[in-house]
Image (cartoon, rainbow, N blue to C red):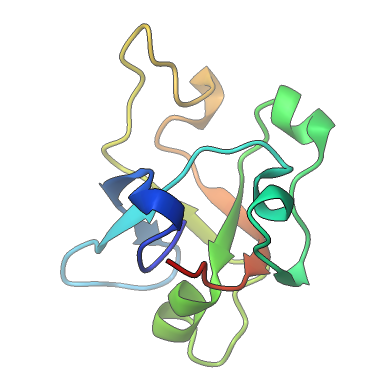
Length: 119
């Protein structure tokens, strides 16, 4: 999830809720579904925490990696790892199944922070 443009302006804008933060209106942020190697292939450096594992990917684990701009804006103290986000309006629309059935409207734990991608 990024608070700015990502490579090739991919992904789509979705409203995001942040656990424990009462925001007047959920911000619209760019969301990208990716495989664990996404950041390495695009040379986006991991700054904190970790990227999800292949097993977590296959098991549809409810985890998220956010970029540094997101952390600076919503966690100014820098403590994003262990926090949680959710995407209230994201839904599966066959043939596009974006979420595992158990994760729809659920919280995703932030496990990693990456550098902001260069355009």
